[in-house]
Length: 138
Length: 277
Image: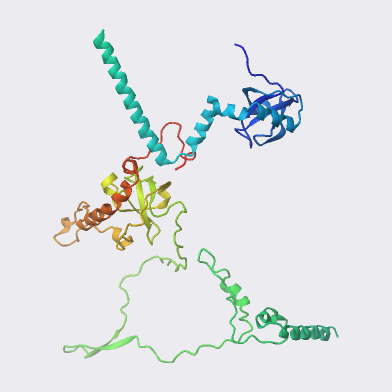
């Protein structure tokens, strides 16, 4: 297995826990084996030392020098269009879906259930149709 | 000298105060020497705590009211003697003609042990506050009883604090019913029941249980048998009338009728404290 995401200067990561949970940040520098200096000027994460187990590395990387200033980080982040690219990933979509589900009320959940039932009924019908066709043809 | 000085200061304050507005005068009135506040009753020295108990006891109030200073005017008891007996005429010969009989008959039986009497309680129940999430038309989920899990429509709060709800009956079989708000989950879903008229007769008395027992002694010892509960025609009629009004309001919202018809349940991985209702 080949690793594709590394801890390195410029790596965009997702904050897994804490106040900034769910926000993107950029690794600015590696302080020690446990902590990194991160910053997220476009996403509202303040420059801080953060434990690696709070960081989930993404596929994205921006070109900055170690301990780059906030202005530089912001510029590269916007240039790379990281925010929009992140929104398109299935990872981000899953998170958005999860958050959306949390806000559903009981009535919404019921309507969703009914729609799901309808969908599977249609699918089942189609599947059986195709099965019969295959049976008859052979 | 010192006393005189303070007195003069007070006097000067008085004059200064008098020049001011009439309304402000009352706040300085305690500075005035020898001014009696005649005719103005002070606030009560005792107050009633939330539990219905007075803040100060009898003894504390005695000193607070300074009753030891005040002269007690003893109430002169009226000297009319109460008569405890009456004279009854007795017929028949050799019976003395009349007899003195006590007005109050003494009991023929005394208990062997003293039974302690309960003291009169001054506590009053406070009116039950309705949860903010429950307003007329809110869809509630019942958590206990034979209709457990049913989604019902809240109509109004009764005087006893209980909630008046209905299924409606024609949708999910829950009749007009009283429920405790503790056994209910309030959802965010609301039925617009602004146009609904709920008859005033649907109060706590309406739902009071009537005894199903037949009166004893009507025909022997074995006559006392329980009759099963049956819904009265009046209730059926009331339910029908209300359902007729409520059903179009429910139908106005798509798939709401279907929603009310289904029972609520939790599936795997669902925790009520994490859910939104």
